[in-house]
Length: 196
Ligand code: S6P
Ligand code: ZN
Image (cartoon, rainbow, N blue to C red):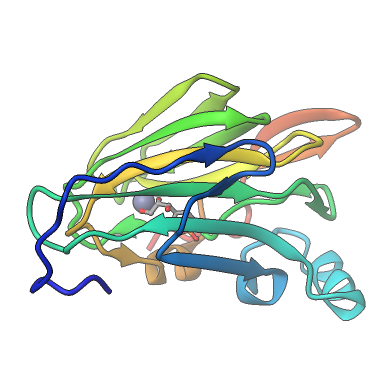
């Protein structure tokens, strides 16, 4: 965490795509299959895959700033290509703890979807292609999904006070899932989704 005692000075950083790295990140998060228990529809495929290897599913590079109103955290999110059964590799997904905080994503490489939903049960999916921005408004949970053959790389920016609520999605999952059905990418109702 960035100390609030530090005075933040303007800064810049280089983004290199590929491979999808930034200069001097403050944080580099690795998310492997084992940290996504219960999130993929085909539990048997998940268990089989995990037995073979705890595959790296996605990575995040962050530039941290003081967690105070007005400041913005930014970084890169990289979802590797792959599937668990027929379901594409994806992020865990979360609500922001400060529910009203939004987030901007800008796709730099790859092909995917930003899956979003609200506590009230509304959902939306926006396609991610290079040079397209997706805005996630406050109140919307979000998960990025890689439906392509190369890394899905996105730049993100969100309020430093946002915080993360992963628990709700771990319990309820997302209402919709993105799978490959007979060679086509389709969005289907997720049987694992819980209404409460
Ligand atoms: C944070 C922002 C991203 C995600 C990243 C990984 O608010 O939305 O930096 O952290 O895409 O996803 P997740 O769901 O594991 O945090
Ligand atoms: Zn977020």
